[in-house]
Length: 268
Image (tube, rainbow, N blue to C red; front, side):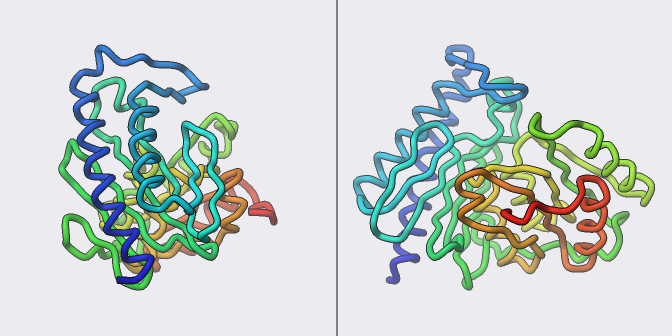
């Protein structure tokens, strides 16, 4: 088994375990300790304990690997592999008892995401992928939507307080003028995974953190979708813009984003 394949098998196991831990906490959410980090940016003791669980498992199985996570400081290793953790993506949904959250784990090598796992335990859906080997949902190979028009399906649109609302309103106006539909589900990782599964025709967000997007962007590429190129080191350190869609509409989606938000900064 290759080093990447070994890490994928490990990721499947620990994400399944962590997702069950998170699901138990979800059903007991009245007893959560919740903090507000910013506008629509919440963290609970569930986020912290699930990330601790994943970090401990990585440390036991791959002690020389680096770790980047949402809730704790980074760990620098020497192996050339970096794990990227979002213990609960969609915390606002989670703490309010709404389905639409997931546990996310991606692994990066040589500035590429090489394998990833996402588990949505409420829906019992497990996304897995390895670069060059396909992406799967509960064992079924994923295929991006074959849309040729924005009216053929729903576009995921993310927004956060880093960006003023006006550019996003411009984007939505363009989309609605093209008879398109949009969705903001509260978990960027899941909405991106839905692009890989053909449930959404694309997804755009002016700024995402690495732990929110890297796993699903791998799934989308493996499912035949298009993803805007990005600088991995910048994404790991500061995050960046995300544009993705099926090949039939990608150029139109990217053009709308450029009109709404302006050109992408060169460092991204």
